[in-house]
Length: 75
Image (cartoon, rainbow, N blue to C red; front, side, top):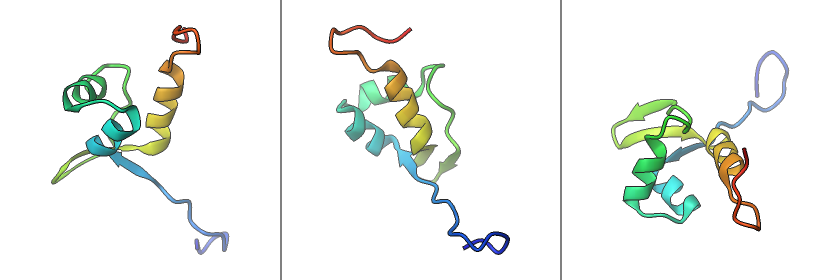
């Protein structure tokens, strides 16, 4: 809880490279390619085991680029 509002603090969820691979259903090479593309969100931290991203940012990136049922990508 926060002292100011008495409400529970917002939970920040992070994703590492492994979680991104699993979420996208891709291998290491493709995950590396995606996470190093200029359109991919910036990592919020670099930890001992690697970079981490905000889950919400990654999910938004996926939604914006997921092909529709006809195989077309948005934009």
